View (tube, rainbow, N blue to C red):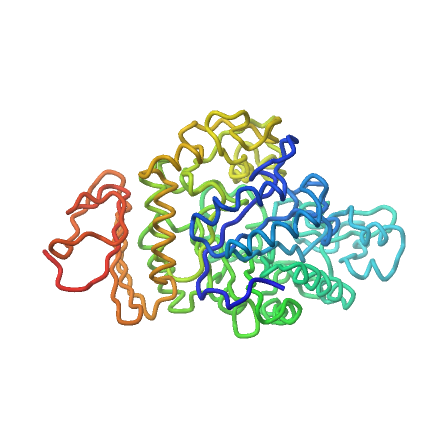
Length: 528
């Protein structure tokens, strides 16, 4: 089984996209041995666990989240023996291992779906097939989360099948006993190989109303959640029938039973309505340990909205903090100005926010969102709305390890996405510079681990349009954190005479510069 001892109360998890992390074969595609080779780098950050994005057999129509075999390693990434060595090496460094579980759907290449198309009645029941309306149109008005209709016609069955994402990702019927048995056995398979926990892809999308009525038009409160240009027609509906969070929350109790009481399980919430309430319901006792939402990425440029989010959580720190991931553009560009100061600012913020935190590979190097041409992009969602897509391919551009090496030390071959990094972003350059973003991440995460402020007894928050102030109680200690979100104005901050903040960036002794932050223990009167 997994690493001995209980999980930390509020772990820091480092997310790895195997395809883009480190290539040991010269194929231009990262592999499991590449992760093992770079585990020392991950451990140096002071994180508690690694989350390995899908490395399973997949045609890669959706970056590996279209799984054709949930218990087999794709040849491009290595073998099960490679995976076992990775787990053993991680555990030797004190790192726990989390793997993705994509329960909502499979690839159309999955043997079960192929059997269903060939007429296997039992396997057909494991998916969501429906007859057309009398006029031949789809069974209802549901829209996939990428925007096109959520139904695709199969001429051999003369039925439509449902998919919440791409048409090559047919939805499974998670209420079917055979599907549940398959997933229970899958989780047991990976636990037997030493896996310590699971990340559940789109956990709030698992279940739907069995009668499948039409969704109504979106209410104003739903439309108000849409930020920026509204390109996706999915947002025009109120998803009251194709997403059932209440039913789905209870379903995660089954997943807890399958995974075991000592596994750490984090779900991805893909519904923006009542997101915090949903996260709380999915993490009630006997369910998930955490359920992350898109809120941190959406509000982390606005101190007032960030304060409101902290108040909404109200001591139930069940929604992990993150600013970038495999589905979102890198936050250094999306939320900030691309500067080292901005990168250090968000690292400092992650060090004290209450609850678990997820770091996306490369953010510790201060990597910005790369520019890719249409010809270079392979992501289906980016291409669907080109040039206005979400930018999902950018954060998957491979990691620069060595400034002067071919392929930045990521590969001896041609990387699967072009690498046009500035050489000062490479890990070896930053490792040699004590003032680099990389070293600041190490300091920030070491502070977080040492103080365990992310598992506080109490938090109070104040905010203005440019400043966030936190007061944190942990045991007998009282801490204060001040964060200057302004990009052109410094901020005076009173501190105790003769003392410096315990963790800071952009601090000159009296004032916080733009993108400056300071955290200190209140062990005496402040020097005004």
